Image 1: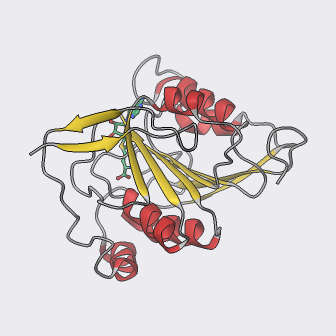
Image 2: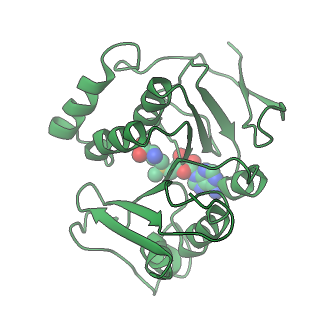
Length: 231
Ligand SMILES: C[S@@+](CC[C@H](N)C(=O)[O-])C[C@H]1O[C@@H](n2cnc3c(N)ncnc32)[C@H](O)[C@@H]1O
């Protein structure tokens, strides 16, 4: 069965293009139609997956931000899509989820959702910078140069009221301690990984802290900005 996913719409209204995915749409068993908040609590208490204990935090932060523009970089099964989409639906906002591959488990059928099968750097480079991102969750390729580039691009797209969430600064279950390895030249965790990209940010402009479980969920914020988005 063929389903069509619109690519993301960085021009804020103009349809960019479409892609086709060759598998049936399916809602996750704990999909947003049932009782998502209960499923988020259950995941915090009993979840075994590597981001399960962050789901409720991601949901709470996105919902309480009262934001309308959410972005997810790195989808895989779609587990972290669910809390962001539930918050987007409750805030009457929209979630853009980006991955090189389509989600394999939680595949939403929602007018508040757009899946973009695209490289994340390319996605950020083409996002309309007049459209401020309220909450972004970063969990795609974790090498230092990749995350550093994402944060550089994001600088133009967020303001002090935006929240940037990053998974895996404590990758490999080193939590509650950060994990960085400067000896790795290649691969997913190359050149110091996401910790190095965040740790090198100028503390005059940025502040951050990390929930020390499930490989870490870092909450990053721009303190002020004279250019780009001032709030
Ligand atoms: C760790 S998984 C995401 C897990 C998901 N956020 C969760 O917690 O359930 C990383 C995902 O990033 C995607 N990815 C890696 N590099 C990417 C890139 N350059 N552009 C887009 N997606 C990428 C992979 O296909 C993979 O699905």
